[in-house]
Length: 148
Image 1 (tube, rainbow, N blue to C red):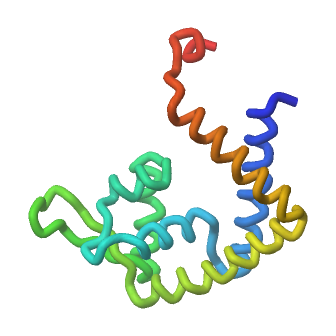
Image 2 (image 1 turned 180 degrees about the horizontal axis):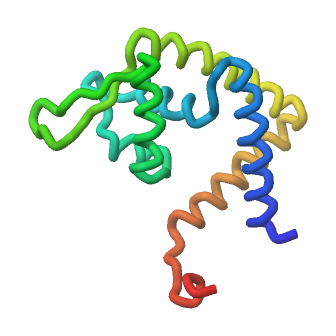
């Protein structure tokens, strides 16, 4: 099987498994990622564009998640103090509590995954995935690849 396909299938399986675990807590991986991004943001929060770029998803997809989290009382949207066109997203106390709960679950998920690998396999996998990501980020797309 081509390596790219194996990585895509692994991503899909891990995403589905993580979503199933977090669903037991009424949440999802995407929710945790949004909350985590907001939790490490500067005090004024991140713009919706900064959140979307950091998550690698489109703005419209992120807006649906933020709408839901805002309606549940986990995040707030506020206009930027210097540029009113920008909407910043910050965590509420409820959002911070949910983030903390989900972070505990994510640590358990990580420990479970790591328990299936030796320490050497973990280090090798981390190095290999980092190299692959760097290659993909730094390699220009050629016209032939775009049409393939």
